[in-house]
Length: 147
Image 1 (spheres, rainbow, N blue to C red):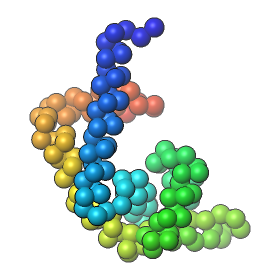
Image 2: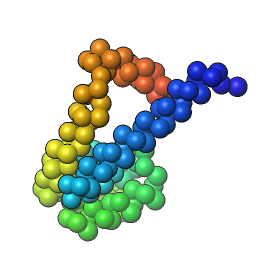
Image 3: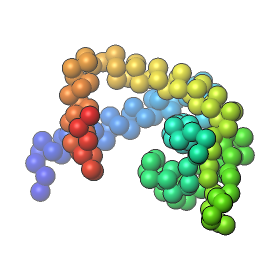
């Protein structure tokens, strides 16, 4: 059985995570911007550059379920934020690439999302505390990360 301390950390981690995400989502909504999930996909595609990513790579990088990423990509494509390109050596495969409109949307979203991170986390913890929390959370990841 988990220790009382582990239960307390788990409960706080879940509540704080949900609360922070809800507040960031609210800020995007108030700014007339798409949901945070859109930012995550646009960010990964922008980071991939002109080569784009295959849907399975987006699933790995974002941890969305396959059915969720399919629906999300359909919405992003309908909005002109991404484009689907055929893969030369795979008749059924597609590469997803961010469009100029998608890059601009990501930029506008980051202005709000980044401000939320600064206000909700950065303004409440010192640099030392931020580094400590980051290191501790990194140990909880699978696989663990130490940076």
